[in-house]
Image 1 (tube, rainbow, N blue to C red):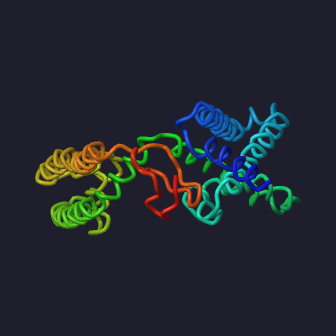
Image 2: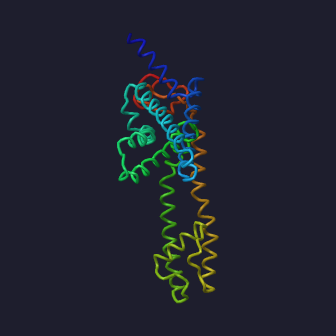
Image 3: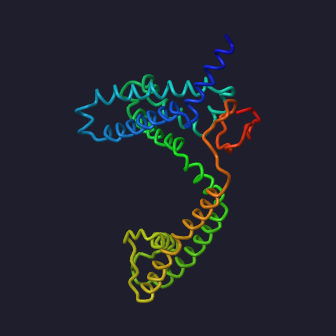
Length: 272
């Protein structure tokens, strides 16, 4: 009896956590369709005119999708030996947040809870984060961002210093021109808006010198935007050159990204 139980759990784990088999790929595709359908329903439900006509349909469809995600959540817990590893993992928390709002609506009835319910229902948008589990390249991108973090932090600090200096200069140049540079913080705000090429237009330099400095800031902004992209791209290229990994997930702790020739989990040592 125990062998059958273990065999059943192993098969379930293979379908849910891995994408190398036909059953695993089908499971991932169906779940992706459910996630996308849920996001579309949330967006359409926020349109008052559409929600007024199809509220009953939206409610029933949401319950169906919520039940599907509930079953998925339970099966993920059942199919691994150490459920806590999944429950308190990034994806486990996201799955929980994506599922719980509809159930909470059952306990928060009455007009006084309408505003709370409206906010809780927005948590369903977290389901879109579940998509990243099924995009293999997202793991490489996440690692590239994590590796690039120190460089990006230093770069952002340098940009902040430049913004403070240029903002102070603009305050001195435009202080008497009644152009909106009424303080250094407001001038720094203008510098950041201009560097990022957003350009709201709520503050505009009027003096010739101020306009000249603004032109330099605008040109500088294009170069600044390209730097973080280059840092992450370089790290991403490095990630793609590393040893190939597969979608095999550990049955004990759910750790992924094992190398193709790995026979044991690199996190807990369990045989995979």
